[in-house]
Length: 111
Image (cartoon, rainbow, N blue to C red; front, side, top):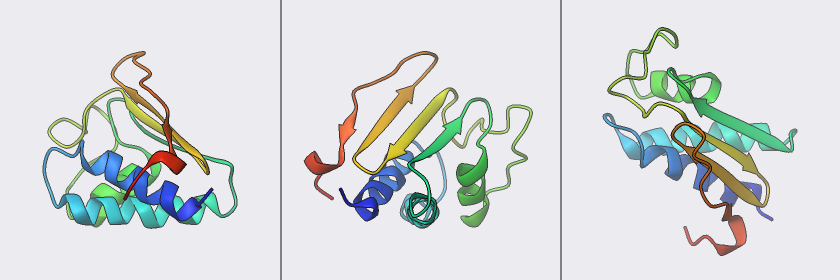
């Protein structure tokens, strides 16, 4: 499977959930970072529990949104309790507390 396509899908998935800011730029910031990580890792995990962490926090900062990354800083930026496990061949989303949603296969996705 294409890690480029998986990275693009991850960026678009999160951009659809961004409450404010430039969604296209946000998707691109995530895409670039996920692609880099998938070069050396099997799985990239993107999570916003109460706060964006790691790649998500970097992408939020890259589009010019101030966010502390702790103490409920995601409010008004990204939804709580959302996560996305990115693999070379699929995305495994979670939308809300314990709400695992359908796996998204890279081969089935049209960019």
